[in-house]
Length: 128
Image (cartoon, rainbow, N blue to C red; front, side, top):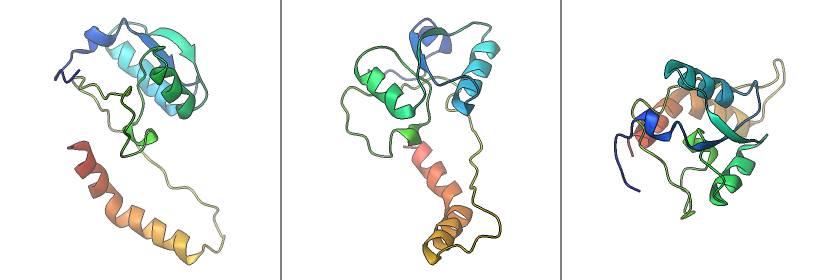
């Protein structure tokens, strides 16, 4: 625990808990393993991030997942973020809402926050 700059090959043989085929996280994981010319050792495929989180806590394996799916401040002692060289990979986030729908003032304020401040909030938090 606390080790820095871990090489990908160090974790490649660990049992992985993965999202379902077609999910963005699974596609990114597959790309990562392909770039390292290996295949993940899939222990279990789960359909929600919460199920993966609980499986990690139960000691069933490790997972590649967005830090934000865990919450910004997790105090679960059985969870740790590993410092893997070349991770995290940047991804795209999309804000989706029905076109033509009249949005509430709160929804508009949230959209304004995302458009104007989210990039900096994410950048600041990644440096933690």
